[in-house]
Image (tube, rainbow over all chains, first blue to last red; front, side, top):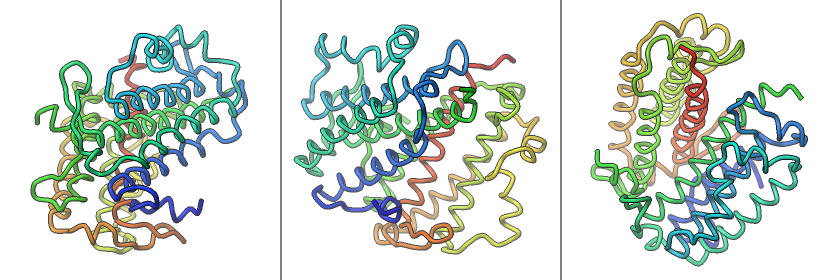
Length: 174
Length: 174
């Protein structure tokens, strides 16, 4: 993809106008994640800044897990079933349990996971339209949010963790 | 502002439709920055995680500086003059020089700075329309970007640093 294409938030072929703009933003955010993690080794992906730190690998797995949860919440418009929550919980909540489980995986593992999940998101968004994007559904315990917000939030969470990844990366000792 | 209002990315009174959606996102991002820094003391705002760390105060000043630069680049559609660059350089580039200068300021200082700069941005955006948002102008040395991208990028930079602020905050020792 040309760099220039990434610096345009605009309509996008295959998507309705508003969804195209949203996808433009998601594409740019993803390109910066890719840039931040390029070339990292397994040891670097597992590196912990300190006791309470998430590794870069954990943050990447978190991004995929959040996106999978929002796929269910927006494309199927329902809360997660218990089995789904059990599968995604570790990646969403991170913490001690995640530290023990999410390690020893290489960059290709995390990148493939992110890319496969994203491909499903884009396939689903191609079938939706701008009216769907504005649709308001429950959000959390007692909030409401429109679908646009929910997908903005998935991207916003990725950007926030990419900021943290940059910070961890500058401190790698392996 | 009601929490619910923040969870809708939609048209916004006083702005054209696309600008309204962009401002909805900027509002949400800012509310999360506010939440991340609420109640911090001067010592906490100056806290350095390590030798190479930016303090939370430095990151907040960076956000205002970036926004001021993009105001010039988009509302006046030109590069910064030397005098403007000199004024904004420390906040934009951070690093050693910024460490010595940006300290000893309280939360009200940073929050007022952010809010005053943002008020100017919103005033200017109220005068613009969706055609302006799509307008493509030079970006950096040899890129081009539309105005939508440039304001998305200001927000994206804030979100990234807010992610870092959350990380620093969890490690405060003062």
